[in-house]
Image 1 (cartoon, rainbow, N blue to C red):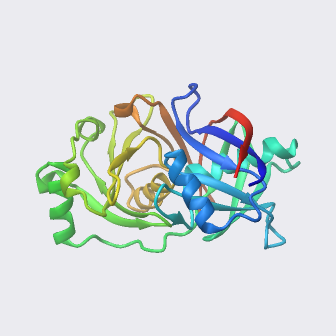
Image 2 (image 1 turned 90 degrees about the vertical axis):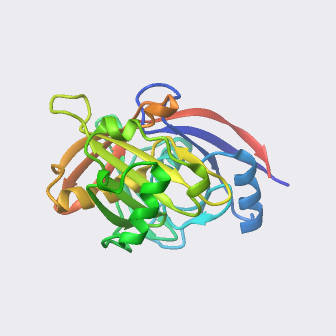
Length: 278
């Protein structure tokens, strides 16, 4: 056992405790993957991250990302939350506002600007049409007619997202999925708000497997949606999506595409700081 610095941060909301929480263990060198997985299972948050010295000299720090049941090569809100925790611990923001994170998916740039943080989305590793048999299954999980799914795409960038688009944000908010049919699917759903609304899209994310739940605010999914919706002309290169309303959260995800790079950003707030024995 060793005493280590510990943080919890709230990601993707300007409203206090209305985003997606993340647990961060600092100075995690010496912990085994089994130690990390057990602690992540114990925190019972969407993800827990562990900060380590970088192996790539271009990176500022290295991170390992765990859900309660598995390690992920990349995830969005853990990237922003880990960068915030690392910056708080280091006490300084680089002059250019950029931090480079090393994770299993490679190097990820994170920038601090205009009171928010944003990560540059890694490339999608699976980006293709979804088979009809899979869409039939998705429709049954979401308890909607198959015809309500206007379009779909695999959006895999670490998490194995299957993205679907509905006609409206109201249709997204009205979903009541059947957990018994979800299985191991990871389904992301998006629909537009009417012109003039505060945000342009509503997003929801549903996970299956050993635990069935809805994610409050999801950076990786929104990164995938940004690539897909801008490629197909459904979304402009700059927009704001909301997520988590059904769960009592107020997530806001800011998408900006600059020179083909997708930046996924939002507010990040430090909530808890202390030490743990692990």
